[in-house]
Image (tube, rainbow, N blue to C red):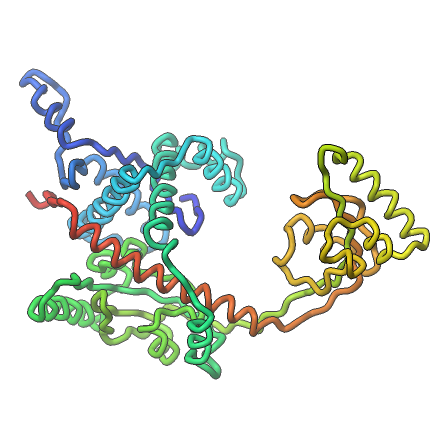
Length: 441
């Protein structure tokens, strides 16, 4: 069973060896007729590196295993190898740029990432290693693949995500223009096929790509399996996942799909959709309704004692224990907060923090608050800000849908911008590179 990883990590539990073109040539030159070691075929040249047939075969094996486990038809070998090679070329280009710009993932960061992967899958590190090896993959190679994925994630953040800005005006306009009525709270699961069109393509070339999209649409209309067609022909980043885009709310859909998808029936395949990146075909796999977003707010007040060279953890904790005991014996919490709390903002209000929403305070503080009953005062506890005692004064259920929708709108706009700009950036990266595909040689 394949391990399910973070959203930004894809399990490639086989080795990826970046062999320099010069090194491969030197090895070939040094091989004598008597040598028994076969020469690894070069299937692509990517700037000053090569992609070897061994590397491609290992990646194809991984993809075939994953598709089989997901009950997705495995496409013809030559089509699958072509798709996988294109992805490897893109990966090599990104790793080359990361190395050139000084992005490096050290062993400590890598170890912590793999520990989180194990924890997310409810495994210990040895159990994770056993599962990977039981699936027929090398754990050392798995580690290096995770290092590559984290490296590419950092490169993407630097090159694309750090430049994305979402303004309040964009959020207001997004909400004003978003779909209303019954479909506004629906979620949709989509599959997607992209026939990419280069930025510099002339009218004749554009028509060639349109013809390809039309042929794919006819194949689908004739009963061809959507995921199989996506794996074989799509230029989208999710091609090797059968084009599956996962679940998205109506307001999170790409703008070119937003007016089409809510009117589609489950299983329906769209007409061809044109965008600056190319021609799209989408299929509505499923949909379901989301409920309004209700949250629990807590009304709290606290007393904070910070630590320094004079007041250590023990002294801060003891002081709060004494204050807590005085409050339990009838002293006024507000007066003691005004006289002792080092949170100046809340101290002036008797320690009152008002109604606190989930995620608004330190996670350790929030965890303690959620464990209290109304009127109860916590034992002293430590956060990054110092030592606290906190009293829960009350709780209430609140319809947070409007604020929640603004937050989700910001996320949706940002994700849309990132996706669009990342695709454009990858196209430019490939256009500016020296790439020779030798798969059919």
